[in-house]
Image (tube, rainbow, N blue to C red; front, side, top):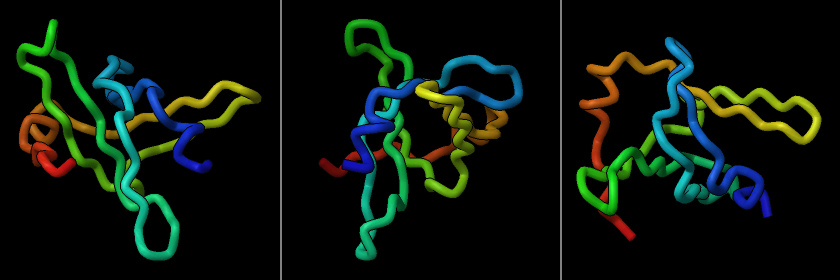
Length: 88
């Protein structure tokens, strides 16, 4: 399905091209469109790991053949302030 294309994709911070994390899951809205992505960030051996919910319209997608690049324009401050996603 639609979400499978983006699952486990790395998400970059557009400001400095560092990797924020990977797409853990996609939240599909009533119309069957992607509403938000859950990005799992950092964490070594489960320590300090966070899941961030980011609205899909904040995610920039660049598709170059088979290669998909996902990025968000986040200052570190706004990333730190993004809501943790707890619902599973």
